[in-house]
Amino acid sequence: MKTIGLLGGMSWESTVTYYTRINQLVNQQLGGLHSAKIKLASVDFEVIEKQQLNDQWEKSGELLGQEAQRLEQAGADFLVICTNTMHKVAPQIAEHLTIPILHIAEATIEELKEQKLTKVALLGTKYTMTQTFYKQKIIDSGINVWIPSESDIELVNQIIFAELCQGKILTKSKEAFLNVIAKAIEAGAEGVILGCTEIGLLIQQRDVAIPVFDTTEIHSRKAVQRALAE
Image (cartoon, rainbow, N blue to C red; front, side, top):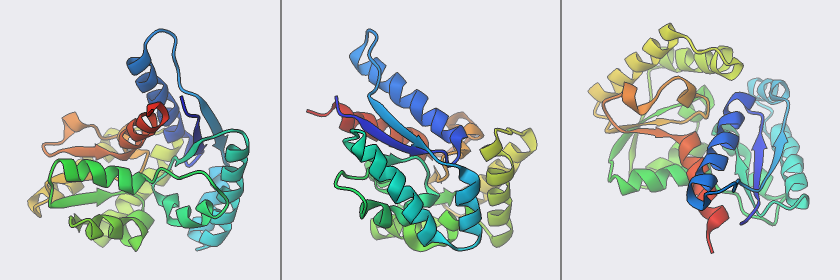
């Protein structure tokens, strides 16, 4: 079994989900008392979030690159960055490594392709929804991307940072998310990407009429596939 390097803490709420799901999936496949071989680095998200706000992405990339390097030195065979937004600096993180990074957007695109979707809604932080580092990968794969209106982008972003990252799961916020998804469906979206690793805490497939692509779940499954591959 390969050792998975988890670069987490962004936020720790979703990192818990990664740790739990990866271990569950390994045990489902191997049985007995089997669990995943994991090295975990968990950063202080307050620092990262301030750097996001101040457009200091290079600083974040250097900080995360150093943490990733420590994971490699500790014996990780590949890296899982437990956040969608900070894949913006994945190329900078990769410069610190000789091991590969399992990219969350690429893992998600594989699933979109399997279901032959042509248009998907992308929900996430305002950075993920509006900047090109994530969205363009989907577009380049031949899939159209719908994002919410400017006011809904701010609403979704506010719920993520002020509530989900702090473990607050509120009914009114779930209703707000479902309202945004309803607009996406009306605009022709055939699926919805939960493009922030915390959104799965609020929205599940049973809540939505079209396919839901929970990036935390997808990323975890792909990590286990790689860890257990011959």
